[in-house]
Amino acid sequence: METGDRIATVLFYLSTPKKGGYTVFTDIKTVAKPTKNDALFWYNMLRSVDIDWRTRHAACPVLLGDKWAMNCFIHEKSEEFVRPCGLDPSIEERYVGDLGGPEPRKYPNISPYCNEGLYCK
Image (cartoon, rainbow, N blue to C red; front, side, top):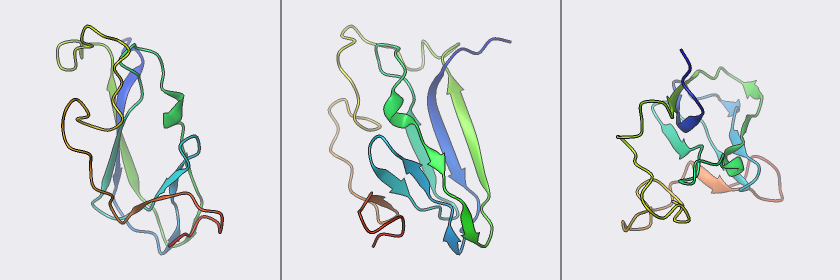
């Protein structure tokens, strides 16, 4: 069955590695530390239905311990009624719920990429 492109992704962390295993979003210079029972959510497509290349990401190697994660992909087919595009395709969300809601708070397990390397404080 053809499911189309991904609208969004949810990445669930099922374990916490002792060292390493970060998820890195290179275009937006952001890293997420894998912590058990946490989840990341992002839209893979813009409201204009173009691919949002800022969501490109990679998993860094686990240096100590184990990392277990699970992905949930939300595809474009059958989602047209759940997340309608709206009338103005130039309106883009910067984060989940960015259509008039408050700016989200910064969480300690997500930090901007820094010059010292991956393990930034």
